Image 1 (cartoon, rainbow, N blue to C red):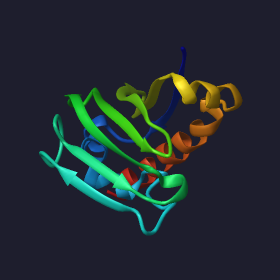
Image 2 (image 1 turned 135 degrees about the vertical axis):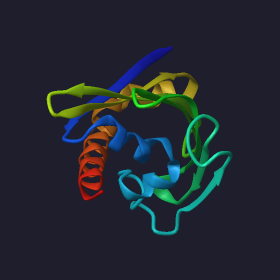
Image 3 (image 1 turned 135 degrees about the horizontal axis):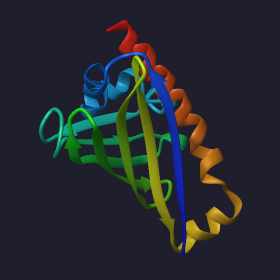
Length: 153
């Protein structure tokens, strides 16, 4: 079994309290997530509370969008959020995600991390794909868009 970690961070010029709400509610992700625009026909459903622990999001799309679910499993406002990310298509995978928010200078260092283990066919896939290169750029785009959305209020 092989494991991977993809981590990106950005300094956002706002207090954590201003950034946190855009991450703790999946309904806000449509404003900044790098994957929200890759499939115009993608369907989304929300379940559980609107934000925080127990909030759930499911998507189903074509091609690169795939399908899966996310659930917030831990939230310590305004310091961190843990998410259980499960892909069901194109390949099955379970990838824990964490967001951390740390004061830095006049802003907040937001770090987005995803971990995973490759088993079975995913392990073969991982021999040819570098998850950091595959997903890291998307994390960078998402953090940049999050900074823009926060600045716009």
